[in-house]
Image (cartoon, rainbow, N blue to C red; front, side, top):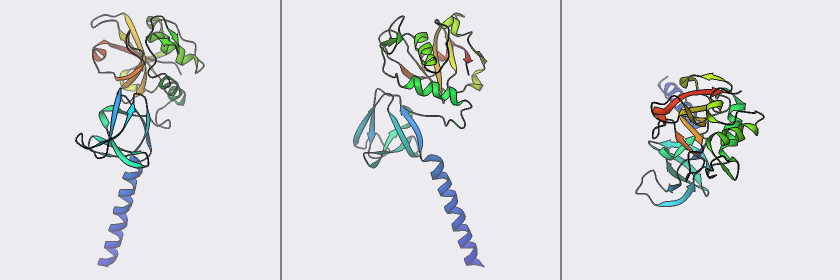
Length: 219
């Protein structure tokens, strides 16, 4: 009986380990640092075995504390989780159309900001949102203040990938002066301002947390 108990316990433990590994393995993510160092071990003192640039896609194989384990050039390596954003699973993201918008938007990471721009040669914030949505079959208004009335209102705690996030032009202002596209995990993609490129940032980074006004869902 004691041996049978040991067998059952070992089998249960193995299933638990496999389920944990399966949950961490195979998640798709992208990098959000200008240059992200790939380390041989989960430590900033470990040797650098490669680098990724902003918007690079990577496959997650596991997690060790604040480090993601990835497969790099056929070997396991590590990147810090602060510079990695997990791509939400379409099955749980609520809207496959919204996720398609995000996937389209991420193709333009690194595109320069151009005032009045609405093409891959350069975007302003609302031009970027309008162009990305046009590639997904939706015709939005041109400027930020009007895009804040497109679709329908969504509260911040109900955000889904693809929602338009709207920000005031300044802290304390009620005028919508900036927009972006929510990508999940409290991150959004946008074309910030002159001298910058399309990038991904936290909704709480810089002044964005104080300037956040609302979100709109198109699909």
